[in-house]
Image (spheres, rainbow, N blue to C red):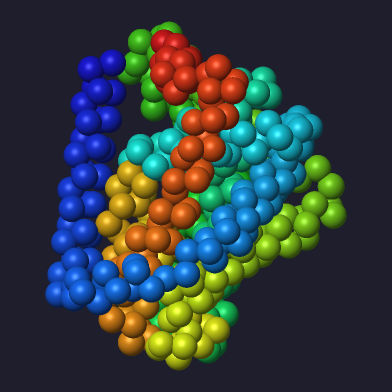
Length: 338
């Protein structure tokens, strides 16, 4: 328990330090008068359709997740949507994507599926997201020359996705051998703890299953494309809200480029709510199209807020309606580890 507390505190401290570093980089050499004018001149009525598109993207995510869980158990869409939003809400204040763990345990309470098995489907979902991001990057490369560091990040992510996906498939295919290796690696632990670790791994492998029907594969692909298309639309709509299209003659590719670069801050575990890293990378992406740092940072703040705060309050509403607290979810998680 003490080691878990130390690890948790270390993650929080590391997240805060990352946030401070990126905030410093984002605000460095910013013209605050330009930043203020960008805030003042923005058309905030366009946030209404942006919020609608974000809500649609969440529904599409829950729908795709339903297909990933279908081989284990058929789950109703409203329950998955609730778990998805609660997990996203937790990600706003937990470091290193720990909101996904909250999402898995909330889904267990809603569905009865083991949290480890649910978490396996979330891992697969994240791999699909990174693969979709890399596909977008490949499309964007055909129309825009990304900086070298972005291309290198894409190569690293591609390698990691391929390695992790291959590892998951091998663990599933050679399940008996995987459990034997796990047993040897945990042999030094007390018997009860070793049995618990191996049991969680066994449940996790239960979540790595082929889709229920062959037709689900293209459907999951279409849903993944639609989810990321929604994200691109939010960027484009906010460009119009800040009048960047007219002021800086942004091409349609700007939304795609900004989406790819900004999403790097979301894919890589970092500070809670991606504060700082999200803003800096968004500012950096817009700088490629000659948008000044001040207006670009104003845009980044609004984009981040419109993606975070509505989901945060919706998650709180869902927990309140279900009479579930994050503390109870955390307690359940600790009890499972005992």
